[in-house]
Length: 303
Image (cartoon, rainbow, N blue to C red; front, side, top):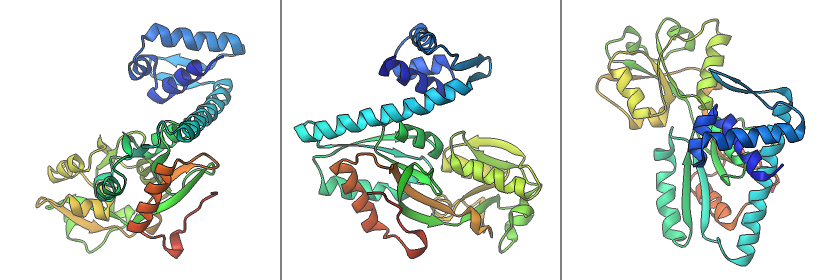
């Protein structure tokens, strides 16, 4: 067993297939297949079930995948700490940011960070919150933007809390309401988010808890396109208020949503007990200067 085999297993699971994993790792599909087969032979267990719909971890595979994420994360921690000691990569920070809201929340931070720390090189990975948490555990990034609550193996610092609002076509009857409840939208088609967006899962669960399953008509990870689909009359979309306000259109009405448990609580997360570089700590300090923690949304940190 070697680290490269474990990294390939993690990538196959993340990409939900061998071809996509090979493309992401810049290797051939037979290389990936051979590495997974060798890993299965060495461990004496089948790790992945393959089908035309993708791949699924077996019970043994779930154990190996979980341990692989931890080992990869520890390896990256060791590399960063040693390189900082040697002074080789003192000026590098790898961030994971979701496409939803990062332009509003983090673009100003980027500018101030660059001004204060011009020697630090920023690398950004864009994915949904769920995918970013997995990249965090694997050590591919040091910090990840994620919605609260985060998993117990992560520490976090709050960034912003916003209520969700409903985006409706301007001519829709519900667009004239002063406010809406989720049940009011039971018969309206939904424009949802792409796979990997934690907010997507929360919206689906909230709808099911209220006795209906949202009727999906489209998915996107881009707020501009989501607003355009709503303006075209496709259906309703739910967005954090600050993001919806930044994407205002004449053909779209923004109506408050009275569902406080669906509030969009954005945080920066890192692995609990993991090593944080000086660059990562500088980024956290700068974000805290922009949006100090409130008593209702205190920082949870094991540092």
